[in-house]
Length: 114
Length: 116
Image (tube, rainbow over all chains, first blue to last red; front, side, top):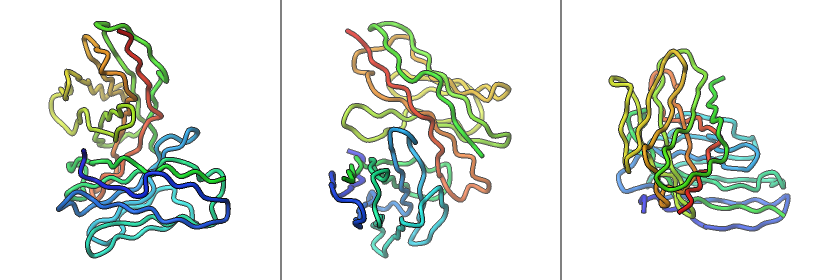
């Protein structure tokens, strides 16, 4: 167990809908990262938050947004869902923001868009 | 743009065979390199990392990797694999300037199946 909790584990929804994925980092970790894993794109970095502030952004679609709350949990919001958004979404946390701070991954949320 | 290539997509070995998984990255500056493993149904776990110093890095479970700067490579090795090494292996690089983030660029992964 990595200590990173992601909910829900599975999500099935229809095209055009909006969903929210939740991540609780390890106790004391200030950084949260979001990744998308799909068959055609592999593991893609989406966004990084540190102590509530956005630190880095990857190829995150405008339909997607994220935030980190004062209690350090994070949410990834996906809207106007398309079939191609079906993927495994991972959250990872680390104690600091730099490269010397290892990432600890959650088990992911599997999103299926029908 | 930075990228990571893993040339072996699917590898099948017998127990006790030696393993080498290739990883090449494209970035001319200072990089931090990682290998992660994902066992079936589990989360990604860090196997080993390279920041600086000795280019031969030892990780958990008997794995090691060698950083060859001139070849932009960071290959993963294990002298004798076990059935329990069956998993997907990901090479990753952090090439963020200034070190303000540990965003990782991952390779596409190598699925290793070890036959007993």
